[in-house]
Image (cartoon, rainbow, N blue to C red; front, side, top):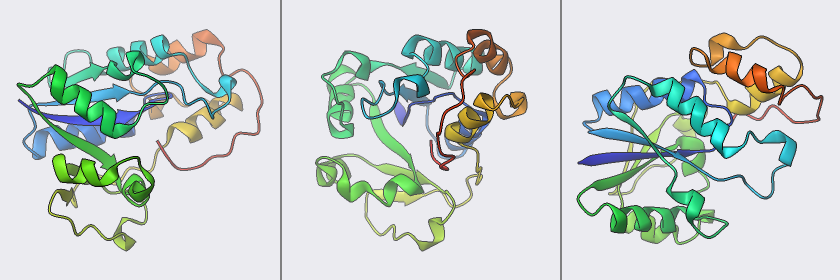
Length: 201
């Protein structure tokens, strides 16, 4: 099968994640999209991160009933910190029957030269890029790289949602059905922090 690997912290998952993945799997001829839930970044504050099990639960709730979306937690049992090249190679070895391609935002493509062994990624894996704000200023000329020009440009980020929740805002329409209520139940974001509203994730 042709699998699109869609990595992220999904902290929390929001409708932008699902809309982009939905477009890609339906219009770019993928059999499935795998939501690759990355472990907690050790450089981020502990009180900024939902635990892995809750992030998994939220995505499970979000994609229920849609067979083309799957969840992948392979990085949870890999040495930390994890690197994309190691994850892609691990997926290829674990599931040799599948053809894996990496899906990232244009903002990540702009910094891919900083990734560990990025040349090996580009040589051995196709990379599909969905547009983000400023995509028109980024150079995409590589034989294994494609920009999905018609994919929806959705400027919603997990960081903005986290900040809003900490300020007591009702963000239910930014998140899949039932996930806003589940996060509210945890009282996880009932604290005021200095987190910035960077447009990422």
